[in-house]
Length: 176
Image (tube, rainbow, N blue to C red; front, side, top):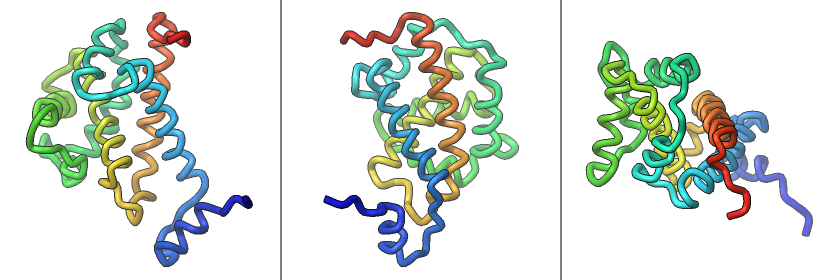
């Protein structure tokens, strides 16, 4: 079978209303791979807020300097004068289950009311978990995905940092 040009097809499917660029789509594709690696090693192949929290608790805390660029990025995106922006609501938290305390933890971290590195990393990974859910379950609309590329660049950098630390700390087991 001859492979199709998937980006060309997606553009045509949307009536060429999308400005998809390979470099941007690669960031999203890389996020799916990086998230898969994280979910495999940190969450025993099935992520949820509890498993993310447990994985972070097993790690040695990150230095504030490592996490601060991520907190800065997400704080500026999701809060203005300590008030949630429409982008924060775009994370599409559900009104039940683990989303309620996760949303509160993210709010505390991004408004700098919580600064503990362990809790900060949990909140940052909860944001990425929302990206994952919204991407995989249709919450991220294709017609606005181009505007999300920076989010995936930051998300990918955070996942790489976490995975490097997990590996360095012996928390990655390739034999399981």
